[in-house]
Image 1 (cartoon, rainbow, N blue to C red):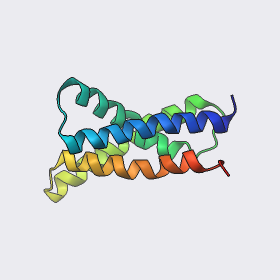
Image 2 (cartoon, rainbow, N blue to C red):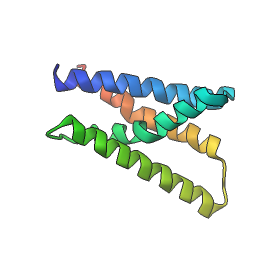
Image 3 (cartoon, rainbow, N blue to C red):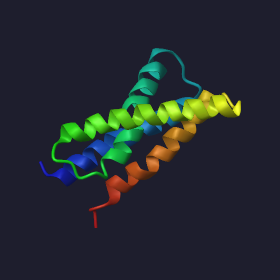
Image 4 (cartoon, rainbow, N blue to C red):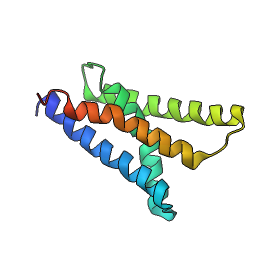
Length: 113
């Protein structure tokens, strides 16, 4: 499987996770489904959207960087909310998901021409 096909398939899955996360916030879904979806999103999606732009030697590098960047961005977002006195995690998760969808869409569309 070529790198482009793998990247586009992964971007598709990540885009679905981000969209489901945003939709769950908007609709107000709770419970186990929301917990699993939020953790999956926060651990991988934002970081993969960024890390997939790097031209690594191995896919394991992309996934390692994706988790590290995702966790770092989540911590920075939480710290910013605390510092600014604006503690609204659901709104932050919604914005985080929507912003993550932009590079994911770019991964889907690039190379399609």
